[in-house]
Image (cartoon, rainbow, N blue to C red; front, side):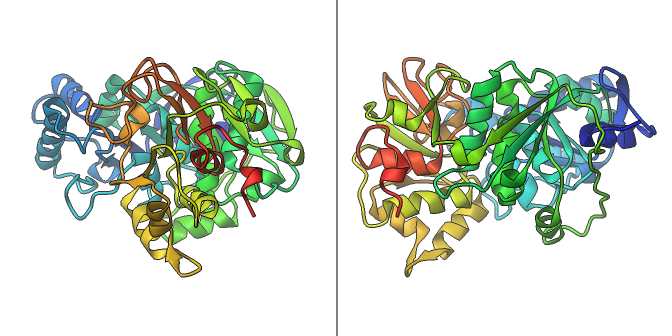
Length: 432
């Protein structure tokens, strides 16, 4: 029986020779990740159901990364970090990346990759809907609720329905002005925010495998914005090189059979795509940048798990070097490693960090920051009727703070080009 990569991973995890879409199976979990928002309630449920003195199933497989509401004076947010520290101490957990410590990382999804927890052929669950990001490594990765996370903490297993798979083939060589963000916005705009509900979104084609690992993570990150259960990309030499540089943990990659059956298949010729935006207030409200160019902006934002990668800041620096922004422009590196690279990476003798700072951008600590709104003192948060263009992944009302603000989603190229004129602008007009 032919299977897709998602079906093969779940079958192996369940100790089965084969599985079919719609089947319910017990899977063995390789990694469980949680953060400061969901970690405390998940731990509380774990203690309630398994006992106050219960120990997690495997402390080497539980990763805790505070990242959402951390650089704030909000007492409730601060209390969550205290609760995490107490749970980590009780359980003697080794993979805790505490804010304020030398181990602090930043956004959990990028940190999982940087710390070597993303391994081809494995199963990862996280208490965050964007846990599907890790699927860029040829693994099954998806988000779960606090109760499921507590069950995994106690047993190392979870009851899962095998999803159908959809295949998205991105054909052609990527034009220099396009990014993974443009590709995923085009896909979501095509199928809608519920077009992949409880299905695996498998990305394939020349353009996909031409992307770096970090850019591939943008594709799988936003699978959830189409309702996807998981996003996934078959591993290749780029994947192996990235993973082996960060861990010596063994893994066995899996691949879709040539005759595997898919729910549906979509093909895109990337050479015919233009820079994209998602207009307020849905990720599937797509438009070419050229169609909305000139829309007045009050704020620009570059950051998040899908838009705060090193490559995003290099893109921004390519546009902003020697120029100045005319509206408040916030830059938030996804991780401390990205921030370090921003200081070390030079463009004609000037660091990426300095280029952005000289252009008038406001830079801060690695974190989720305004991507999830956050407390009122969150860096970059909207507070009124702002028009914002952002590299983040959601633009629902209130997502970045104020319910009165309007958020456009776009690539770092487009956000940076727009920051120069205070209105949505096509990056092809400023890229050399």
